[in-house]
Length: 172
Image 1: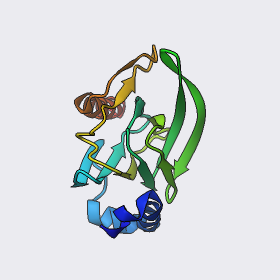
Image 2: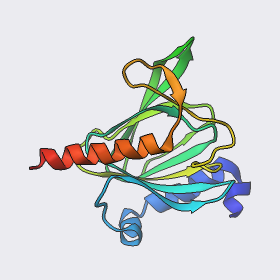
Image 3: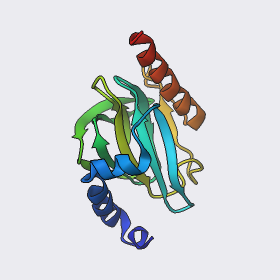
Image 4: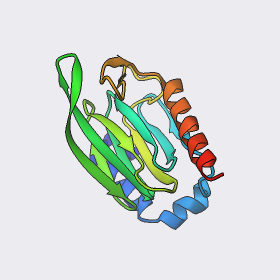
């Protein structure tokens, strides 16, 4: 817990150490069987989640209203960064992360996530607050219209289930 007092820099170092040992994380968490988000630790100050992205899955643009540290331990995670433009958002950059890579996102970042490959991608995400009950309301943006709406964790969980179902159906 001393990493919390060190801020996102200290947490980033810990996540980098963890994702450098992909086999160790897989041994601890198991091989990914289903897409989804699994809370590993949750408090008002810190949330640690194991994310498993279905092949070719895309998650709508969203914000966190808290810093986050993302570490990939298998597969890829492509992030598109967005900026507000009046009532919608516009793409402003991108970053592709592979196994062993770590990225830190500031509290005001808006991003969307894509697993661009044909296998499950796994990541540790650490948030500087309670991801599931943030003190400041979060937003998500419709993929097609880029119109802002309130963030809904159940909607995000449903997107993971739908992406996995599409992948399983495509495999016969």
